[in-house]
Length: 160
Image 1 (tube, rainbow, N blue to C red):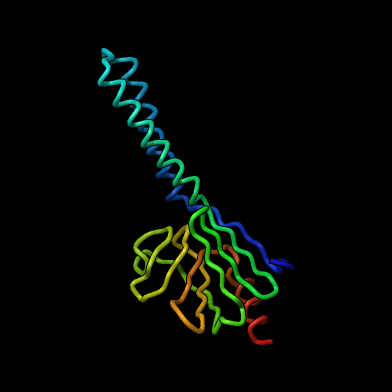
Image 2 (image 1 turned 120 degrees about the vertical axis):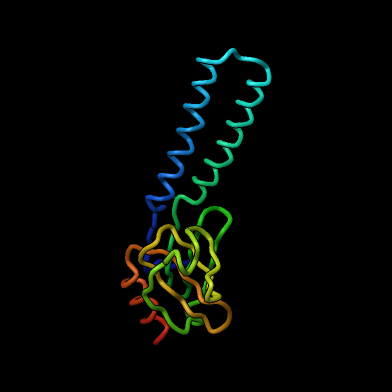
């Protein structure tokens, strides 16, 4: 992708960070309580290994979805949400770009979501977002801290 016209990092919202911190604290303090207060058996040891394995998997998922990266080049919009989710749209294929809200009622949560209206969303919080309507396929919504600037750039590029 040559000539990046816009770049933004949108971190995960407070809800996601709070869930990650709470879950991690429960596993860590639970482990400490078991080690310090309980007569430790081999079954307890296996349980601790299992819980730390689950914690490692969940922390990887939280790390993977810690935020999304938005890039607009001369001819393409790219939104990366972790290692596994990447969406690229050629600007010539965009019908419209508008500012919207990523609401719980529309998507049922944050993350990679399919809306009740048929759209696809990459959301990090329930707040400001951009909605891209392509010539073909589903509408695409993604979180942004600066949706006005993104729509201004995309609308200017699609009109020319």
